[in-house]
Image (cartoon, rainbow, N blue to C red):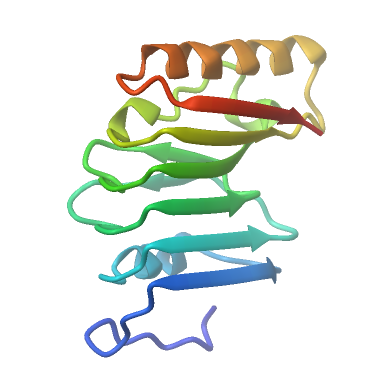
Length: 151
């Protein structure tokens, strides 16, 4: 995303869909997180899969819907405070089967779609990841609906 020079004070996107990206770096996502009016983000990375920790502190202040395909996520307190719908990828072989992604830090969350990518994982890791995600949803104050897809 080096070609994209964003000047946040002038850019007031509310919906951003970027698909089939070959490579994205953490600083690219950090830049998107500072877009003040962004309400819907759909990001799909084709090749390189890397984890990203979404820091708190006012990032994604108005985001309500987030689709991050092939981006394993971890949410810190204060991250995406308005988020209601989330679709993200978990790779048990990379992330560890019992990863805590911090869904409890998304207070308004009510709809979750998780793609469990089991490439390179053993079936035990996939089942542990599924159980961990369900426990996180059961412990969430909103008890969001969760759909898990294994591919």
